Image (cartoon, rainbow, N blue to C red; front, top):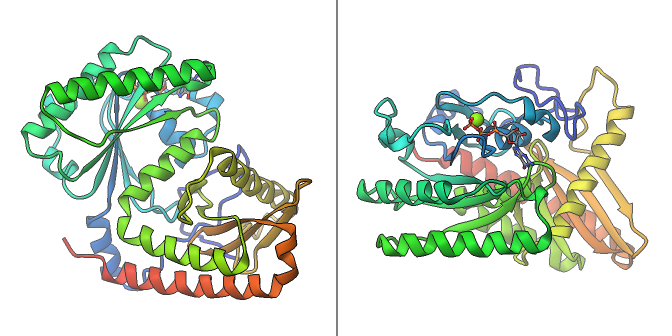
Length: 358
Ligand SMILES: Nc1nc2c(ncn2[C@@H]2O[C@H](COP(=O)(O)OP(=O)(O)OP(=O)(O)O)[C@@H](O)[C@H]2O)c(=O)[nH]1
Ligand SMILES: [Mg+2]
């Protein structure tokens, strides 16, 4: 089993339980390569008004804080950033902006550095509050970035957050209203941008799913390769769906080319939690790790669906959904998973060696 003694930022729970101590950063044999990579990491920037939920999102996804504990978080007073790559495969830096500040007018912040390179800008809106001010802030920030010519390389997302407090109808209404108002104001300002809006809450899997989609935008060159590998695994085995999860964050890195209906994503996360819970009971305190190269599990549901998990490498676990009838070809499935694993290993090795020097 993997044990990483150097890891001092270990998430202390999965769903409030200690499980992911076996955290392995990507294979970086050469220290110089590692240094270069740190220079060019993609960034996720969390913007939004005070108390909209930015720090809660960061803590719940990357520090495994329980949603209930977020009520004790203090307001962020200065820009905070952290490199989350020590905890997971996902390899980016998160910037958590204080809600009370207008970041673009804060001369203490070096924008050219922050907005340089690949980055995703997430505006978090507290949907339980009147959100006109939040929408104004989004438009003003984007206009400011556009004026400075910095909008081009930025992926922009709006998280309509705290939707746990809304009914399905209210969620749909908020989504429509916010999309319309922001796009309308942006087009009035002459800005054409592909704004991606997501309904999120730290009280369910929606925040993990939303951050999965953000993360995928930051690794487009790997994403298409991962998708091809997943398709090549899925088809000969007759699987319904395959997803590649980062076990430390429960964000999925890639899936086969069919989109993932939310209930399937939740099912996969439940499966990862189940493996973690059972392992938590039976793993010895010395070994800590739940995932190693032999980790494999399957659960058979009443409706004939089987969920398989297989650990691949670098904290990445494959979750496959298939019909029970496909298991007659278990040898074929194992063979293709082994091939997939080998393919992943090759891709990751070459990716981390090839990343550009800034
Ligand atoms: N109901 C609900 N409350 C949430 C959610 N996310 C965060 N909160 C609550 O929102 C409040 C503010 O959360 P923070 O994460 O501190 O907000 P912030 O955006 O970082 O605020 P500043 O640091 O002041 O900019 C806390 O009481 C959280 O518990 C959510 O998904 N649902
Ligand atoms: Mg905060």
